[in-house]
Length: 179
Image (cartoon, rainbow, N blue to C red; front, top):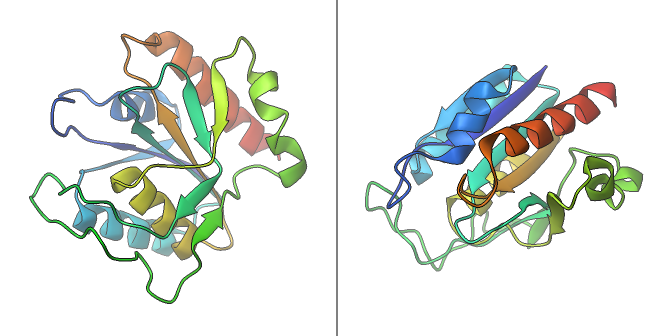
């Protein structure tokens, strides 16, 4: 089973593209409120559910292309969540490695994957940032060591059309389902 996640609204993002895409993905999905607590709870709920694969998504406000994140980093940035909780300056997992690598695709498939998607719509990225996207990604990689886990940053719909992004999400899901 493949599960897709998206985040809810936060700040000036009143309609989060990751939520819209998760709901339209055609597979089991979860919407995660933009809080550390909700991210922790969602990671533990997915661990209990035991999916084969999780494609987590979040919006990247400045991106013009979709970004397949290669690593979740063991760092929490200085920004408070929507509940005002600030965890910055700490490690996500104090005794954990500095980063955990994507397990969604087979290593030999990763470099060629953006080209397989076509038309320059997807790039590989080595940093999922330092806010809730990275936090949730690292927690998923940590909680689901036997599952295939990846994170896709998506642009706002005014930078890349919803239909184009949904087509890419479908291609990612199809690739994971075939593997």
